[in-house]
Image (cartoon, rainbow over all chains, first blue to last red; front, side, top):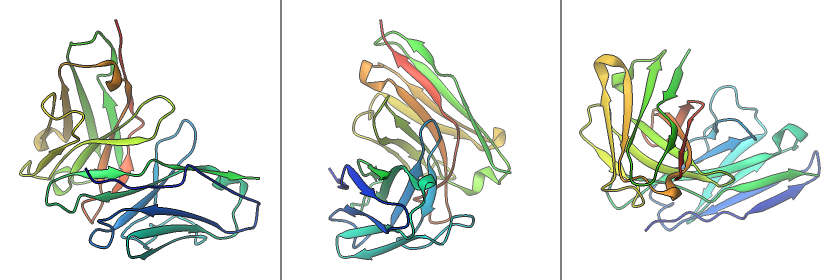
Length: 109
Length: 119
């Protein structure tokens, strides 16, 4: 079955740049999406179609894609960015199926 | 304002059934695919099932295929998940999510309904 692989954790100091990667064989053929989830809250879409930012999402959030890896970049990390981040994509085999990565805990030191 | 309100969760014994509902408002319901996503306590997000705007395309995670059935009633702006033969590993917070313009992202989420499977 199709899988997306994320690092379990990333730590950065305030003001630094955080990069969270997501790897999957189908990513060259399917867009990736990124969600932020804070404790006790529903996920929020922060990046769609690899690099597009929904309205209301701060400009410090950006996305990029290269081959089988997509990257969520948070520039000038703030304390409020501490959260779990999940990548997501669609199965490229033609079945109506979605997959999430395992999630990355971003810690702001 | 888009609102998604899930209901129907609760405590159920293994092997029994439960039906979740999601009431949608604030958008043209029958224009969009809808999905169920769950999150077990302390774990990550797991896609459960999705249904296209006209119910013509439906998909399930392998973990629930054959046990869960997704459906929608566009006249009632509602999404459903019939869950049969429930197992302890189905214990989770179940979110209803609206697909975005691309069809494969989730731009709005409900607050979830908790399903606990235990004897």
